[in-house]
Image (cartoon, rainbow, N blue to C red; front, side):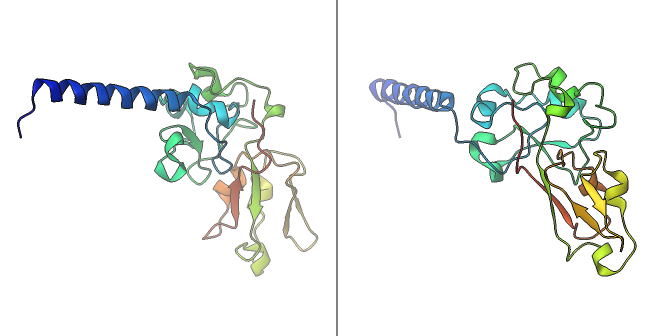
Length: 196
């Protein structure tokens, strides 16, 4: 098929118009996603996707490698933005290697992640499934309580069963990461997440 000069310029103009439209659409704040766990210091989701340039610096500086890139399952507007996966590694902003300074927020070049006091951070809340919990199956296991950095987020009953207090949970995912049950009895959800 031969393309004439006129047809070539018409296709070029249509392509430019399509790209311009896509660029304008990307500037419109996206609807907030309620199901993506963002690193500490993340701005509100409606602006996060606009500010994040998908550079990957936060992934590089995360000592536990808990930060992964979102994929198409997280929505097209979120592709290649950072998200937390506590099954890969816990977020150590509350206690651990990032306790003094949250590296992901410190090195974010655009402000999509901002430095905040650790007391202001809540990545999400742990969801507990007692049917999968070793302690509820009659085995001795309180690893979640032993590893949790937040006082009173997890308490242990007299018969050695964990009780989770979502209002105290900061969503670091340490209990999820160290949970010995397979499949895990704990899931980190973005419920109650605080954004900057």
